[in-house]
Amino acid sequence: MNWFLLLFSGVAAIFIIRTLILARPGISAEQARAVLNSGAAVLVDVREAGEWAGGTARHAALLPLSDLRGERTQWRAFLAKHKGKQLLLYCRSGSRSGMAAAQLRREGFNAVNAGSAGIWVQ
Image (cartoon, rainbow, N blue to C red; front, top):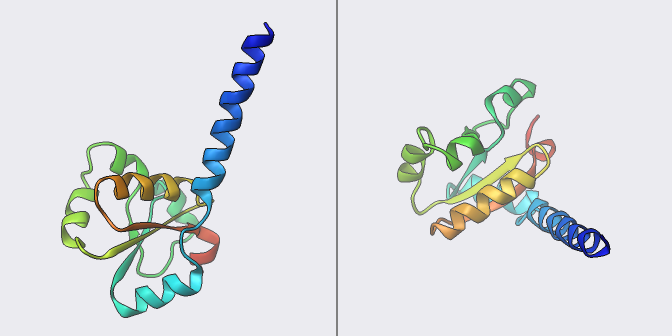
């Protein structure tokens, strides 16, 4: 039983550390605003549609993480249109945007976790 508890604790610790690392923004708000203003980047809200009612950042593309991980009915055209631009992703806490940025980087896109919606939603 001690081995099971030890194994479970180790897996839980890895999950918590991974989540905390992914949730950290990869760019400061000031840097993100500068690159957005230059036109070299686009801002993407990866929250789900039901979460957008609480407000979204001005000019942010609304593309849920579930679509990125699924059929990409919305993401496919967006990625093709903005190929070569930096993708600045945000969500409620910064965790999902971190996961989305990591997935997109594995696919060759210049994607960065821009943090939580609190920074972006006015």
